[in-house]
View 1 (cartoon, rainbow, N blue to C red):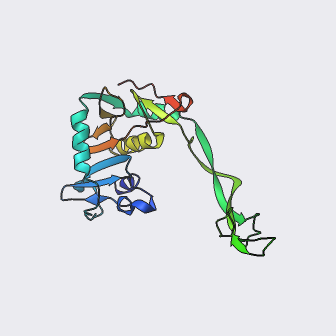
View 2: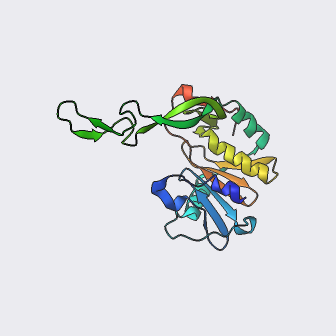
View 3: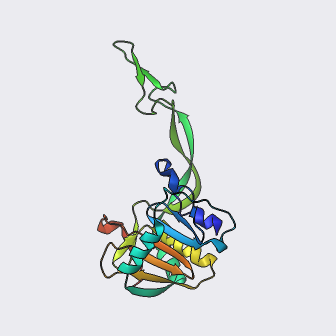
Length: 214
């Protein structure tokens, strides 16, 4: 469970408080600001500290419970089928090469005054990323949203829900939701709680219909 918890944390350097799970006496929480998970302490092997700057996850969960009066059981096999129809794209191995704009120096010399300024192309590093032809994996196509019920969600987050359910050896999860759009989706997997924010701005061509009806 500890490895799964890390998938719910943030990699945003400006939100360092979200980069690690947070704990109290009873539960461990992890969130990146878009998806949240609460797990009983007893299901974790690692010991997590409490940070007073961490978001009030219990309040977020209570709000989701009070707003979501409807519920539906969804088979994880159906979640997998929905994820399978989301288009994927290749991920290429990334490596660096000398910046062609500054010849790898990081500076540009003005031809008129001989003054030096930072290269805009590489930001002064002298290197730029290039894509090799070697494919190292795949990912969900950027900008695609998975429609479940009346709302749309980031496919990667739906996959994390699937992974937790699979880890718990569950064949289905319970979704608690609202008839209104743009409300948080609450997922119950035994005594594990997940809260997920829906997307708001999409174009019709970016939406993939999951076939899951709530």
